[in-house]
Length: 240
Image (tube, rainbow, N blue to C red; front, side):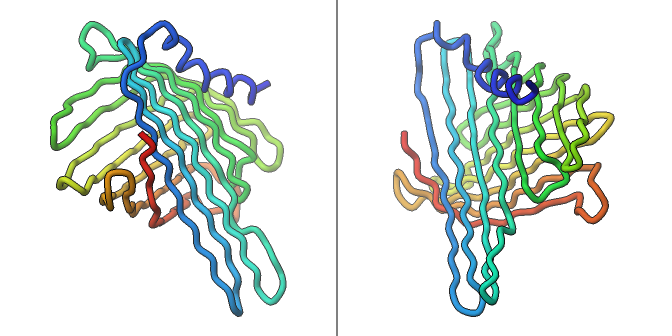
């Protein structure tokens, strides 16, 4: 039931857009792959698909990403990383289009964390503070509800407050710096996610991206770290 609610929330952010005339849509695909052979054989894969849509009354963002890693040492093969995350946010524009009401939903599954899954539904206020040729900055804040189940089968559901910022700086004609940060504060756990990245265009469609991703949970079981970090060099393809 809880997973059904999350999927419905992911779809709900785009429900009202059907009546609007579609304006430019952008979509990027990100891919990273590493394979080693010899005494230690490893396979690592990182992928992400992100889309942004601007409508007359709505501004929508969708994202899905995954990470997989397998190690083979002395003939013994084991999966050492397996996680995926998806999110959707719809922003309804008010009379001042920089002032918006948002609906957000996310779902995370990390096989090696303290949780079987973590999910969030949230609504609230979103504002674009500035958007000029060199940089842009927006934030969102509002109440929500989290759904989570630990690996021990214990449900940790409760009311949260979610806040997020999105900053982008065009360093040059070919390079862009981005900082995305979110935090969900609840009585059971405070979950935070940060992505810092620098991308450089190779051509009109391809870019090279260096990123640092950090996931933090305040409440974890004994033997697990509160902070997970992921440093990656990936290729980004812009579909349109």
